[in-house]
Image (cartoon, rainbow over all chains, first blue to last red; front, side, top):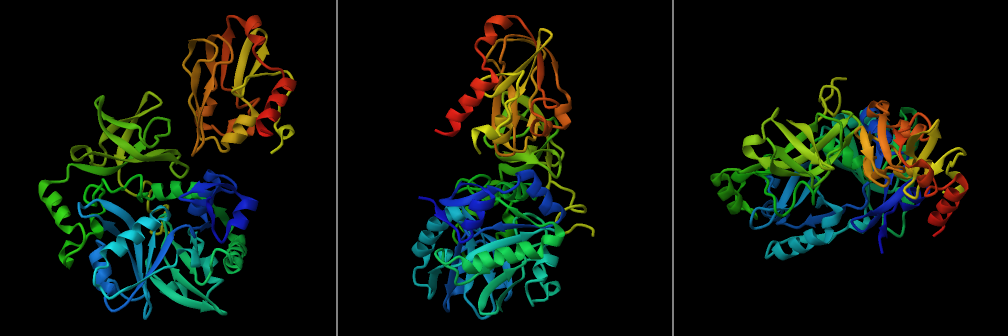
Length: 375
Length: 135
C-alpha cells in the first residue's frame, strides 16, 4: 500500500497521481512542459516529503559522517550544507545526499526516497563504536521545495530571515509562530530556490504542511507560481545535469566515472570506499557519464543504445524531451575517449539512429537559465 | 473523465487503437482520437511515417509525451502519399486539434470497402470508450 505524504489531499484534488518509491505522488498538475517552463521562467513548488530525513547527533557525529560519506564534513561550516555520496566498500555509489550542518543542532541528512531503508541499514551497520545517536525522522517532517528566479521573492514574504544573507547551500533553523522549520538555499533544478523542512509534522497530522503549501501558493500568485509534480522535477534536474539515483548513478557506478569526484575528498582521511576508489583512479577511468543533446528530432530514453560509427559503445541512463532546449537530451556512459564535449555520437531510438552531440552540464545556457543567470 | 467527455465526431471512422480515418474523395486522412491525445496529455514529439506502402495494423510511428510513448497503426492498407510536416515543429497540434490540424498522414487506400467494415462508426467507438473507462 503506497504511503501518502502530508500534502496528499492537495495532490489528489489537483493533480494526476502515481506511485513512486512507495508513495502516492503527483506526476503533474497542469502538465510537465507547463510546469518546467514555470520553474525556469518564474517559480514552482514541489512536495518532496517522500525523501528521507535522518538526524545524526552525538560527540562523534562529525567523525562518523566523515567516515560514512565522501565529501569533507569537517570542512562543512555551521549553517551550511553539502552535496555528498555514500559509497560501498567497492567504491560503488549507494546514494547521493545532502548533509546539513545546523548551528548547535544535530546534523540533518536528506536522502533519496527509494533509499530510506537501505541508507538507514547501512548507517546502523557502520556505526560501530562511534558515539552517535541516529534519529530516523522521515515521516515526522514534511518538506517542500520552491524553485525558480522568483523563488526568493516568493519565500521572502513568508519568513523574517533576510534571504539576501543566504547564499547557495546555506541553511537555517527558524521559527515562525510556534512552528519550527529548516530553511535552505538548495534544490534539484539548477535554478535559485529554497527547500523547507516542516518539523514536527507527522504523516497523520498534515495541517501545518498543508497550511505552508497554500501560503506558498498564495505568496507566489503574483509571479504565476505553479505547483509542480515529479514529472517536471525529473526533466528540470536532467536539464541541469544532475544525476538521478537508480538511473545515472547506482552501486555499479563509482564517483570517478560518474564525474562526481568533486565531492570526493581523498585528502580528508579514511572513508568507506576510499581504497577502492584510489585504486580505480590509478587504473584510469575507462568510461564517463556524459550529456547528450539529440540533433535530429526524437526523444532519447533510458536503455537506448549509444553508438559511435555504427558500433555500440554505451547506454543511455536518463533521457527526456527538454522544453527549455526544445530538443531531446540524455545522460549515459560512454568510453572515456568519446566523452569530450562536441563528440558526435548517435542514439538508437525505436530502431532509428538519431545524431547526438556530447555536451557539458548544464544543458541550458547558464547565462540565460539557472541560478547563475545574468539578471 | 466520463466516456461522453471525449470528442467522437461524425464523419469519421475509428479503430480500437484510437486512430481515426476520414474518407475524402476516395483517399483517407488519418490521425489519433481525442481519447488518445487526452491520455498522452502534452504531446512533444510525433514520429511521422515514411511515404510508401503500408498494410492495415502496421506500426507507423510513435506519438510521445515527456513520460509516455504511444505507437500508432495504419487503420487501412494502401500508400502513404503525404504526411503532416507541421507536426515536426508543432507536435501540440495533436492536443489542440486532434481531428483537424493535428492530422498525421494521408493514405491512398487499396482495399477501402472491405477494410471500412473493420472500423467503428462514432456510436460504436463511444460505446467502446465507455467499456474501457467503466471497467
